[in-house]
Image 1 (tube, rainbow, N blue to C red):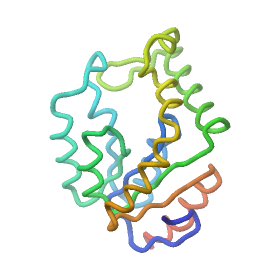
Image 2 (cartoon, rainbow, N blue to C red):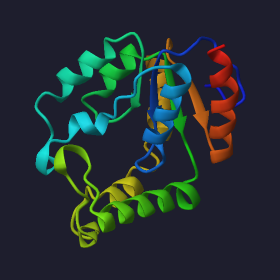
Image 3 (cartoon, rainbow, N blue to C red):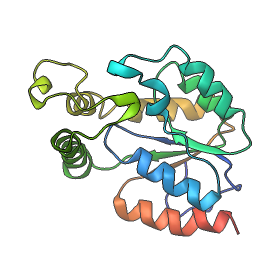
Length: 188
């Protein structure tokens, strides 16, 4: 597993960004896409249909975009993870402090989206705040419940997928240093 200041062994073409909900996966995936000149596919947009119902063609869409020469996306959804992992050459693991960075981010984002009634994927909007108490899959509850899962998944993934380079970023400073350092250097 590489640190934020380790050089990349190759120029990345197919990049996954992993981490708990609200950590900044999509934002980082977009930045990486700009640096490596690759398209970014927001995997949530492929997964969620109207009314938050999973789209039947989700996995077909995933298979289609991972067949491309280059891309970036988020490493989410159990059904898609194996397909994504097989095709990727780099995984960036955002392992930021949960209580001081990730939780405040996911709460701010959820509140902003709900207050502004931002339209997300396929016409969906964030559910009412009160559902945090009734919906086990409410995004804030989900982030809290799954906050440690990647500490098990990523090391296991490295064993199962030795061809996949993994970079672990543990602070916003490390993220910035990596994007402007090793990632940018790999494209020169």
